[in-house]
Image (cartoon, rainbow, N blue to C red; front, side, top):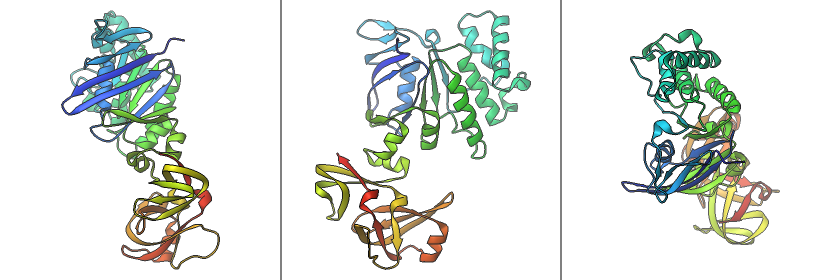
Length: 352
């Protein structure tokens, strides 16, 4: 089967030197995540044809649309690409119907046919009744659907979504996330989503690529990346503890000298992952089964959903997640001294 997308994007923009390889099969949804300035949006612009690559290539459905060595450079309007921008970029003077029809008209579809197909897409996405409204009269969710319909109406090989839910308020995001997942599940082309939200990436994508400073630092399924993050950014993104040290048998010695007992022997430079929910907090030094016990001080407290995240400092830095009832019982406050305990069986260690 011909890949929907086969690309190596090498671009220099200012201080950013981007060098990323991607391959997507038809129907696959890929999330690209990374810190600000990592090159995520630059990658989308290069795939869309808004920014030519300096080196490498972009092939869509087996067709070279950007290949400096081979002399190929297909303009954006002639590529089989649909793009939804973060702020949607709908034409303010056009109705929802004509906004969707615009992409078809740009591909030389007759006006009547373009409007007919645009109307079908608006109905398909459940917003047929707002077809005659201009963007200023649309809700955030309706505007997002119009932008998505405009991108999908041309039946692209590749769909690009730049922070597709960022412009929605918090109350609207969960329902729109579910709807977007349903739309993408029925889309026959490949999809690349840029997002800062780990929940968007985990729910919408079958695979995640992490880009930092213009390079891919980790790639895999959402579960695999969450289980074994390979950078501080990824660990913070998925909300887990990532520690680095040198292993010798069942112990990993961290840079500050603290020792973490792990379930399986590891040798050499190692990364250690401790899930926040595996960190138990005690007012006094615990006795019994935990193999990892450290005196700690509370550095910060945040409530996230139905859990309390507790930042801890001491021989190492950790984040613990406990219930509100447990936090009340411990009398948590910044500066409070307590003990953290983690069973060795709750720790994962692997070569760095």
